Every structure is written in structure tokens, then in C-alpha cells.
Amino acid sequence: MAEWLGKPKVRPEELPEYWRRRPGAVRHFVDNQKPRLYLTLELEDYVRFEQAVQKKYGSTSAFKILEAGVEAIKKWTEDVLKE
Image (cartoon, rainbow, N blue to C red; front, side, top):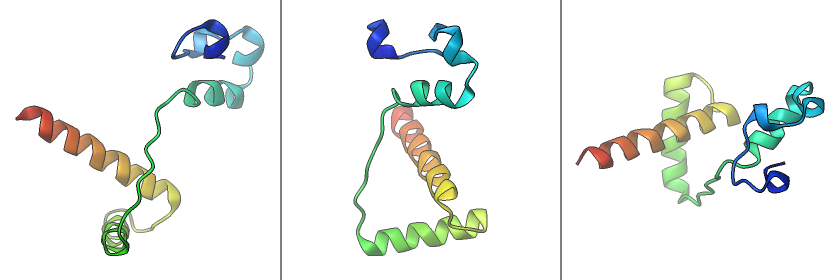
């Protein structure tokens, strides 16, 4: 949708009413513009990360791993920018 609007980002209120009535479509158009990070980890690092997620959240579902990854990135960014 943002491509059609000529914008790098799109907000839900900018979508035509037809799409705004469909929450799944709104999520798609908004989330589609968000940056993504894909990481390749060494197996040992991933195992330790998975253990930490299990300890903190009680499970290692894809959603919990994503939540932990976002939390780690935010914390690291905050720490670096404080310096």
C-alpha cells in the first residue's frame, strides 16, 4: 500500500476504508514496511540463547524467541547510545 501512496511507511489511517475494515489486511500493509533482521548464530550461541529464553519465559516458542530477540536489541541499542 505504501508503494501505491509513494511513501516509505504507511499508517493504518492512510489506508482506504475498505482495507481498514479488515484488521488482518491492515496488519499486513503496516508490518510489511517494517525492517527485518536475519541472524546466523553459531550453534553454541543459539543453544545458550534458547536456554536463556526457556529460563525467562518458560518456553521456547517462536513468539518467545522473537520477544527475547527484540528485547536484546533494544537493550543493546540503549546501552550503546548511553555512552
